Image (tube, rainbow, N blue to C red):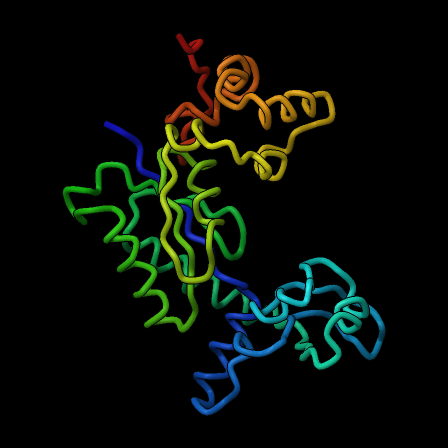
Length: 242
């Protein structure tokens, strides 16, 4: 049986949760997700960083983690909302609660994202893509915020898939498609590559197919072994590729 892993990631979680709360309290409230807005610290005290940003704020080059003062320079009309951690915790619990209703195994990896081991659920839910679409739509209908869902045979590829086009999308990424892809610019981001492996990454850019097979058995076997990083299972060693 092939593994089936969903990675469910809330889009701009802190901003989305704040927006959903405001709209629940007042349906006529301005949706922060539609304006130049960020969640951050106390701008008046001149401290704090961007914790989440709206899609339009992102177009100004505002990045998560940058100082609010820098974000303000990029976008003078930026709306800055202080964080509400109690709201985030409550929203996260509701989000995970829905996943627990449908997934046999869940591995929550942060306040706004989780892996769901959906292996064997095709007989219950039918086509995985269709079910993932229903799941994201249910989350939006019941909780008021959108998610991306990445689908693959292991956690790494599912995570990569969920980070494709946003927001409110379902994406798949197969091992075969990943191997054939020549766009490995996100390699370091997902595998936490140390400096000794930078040369390998450069070779992957120029010779992705040939060099990848050499790397697989040595240090990247969890990426291509469908059972290596499945929820709840310890890493396994992949046999050398033929």
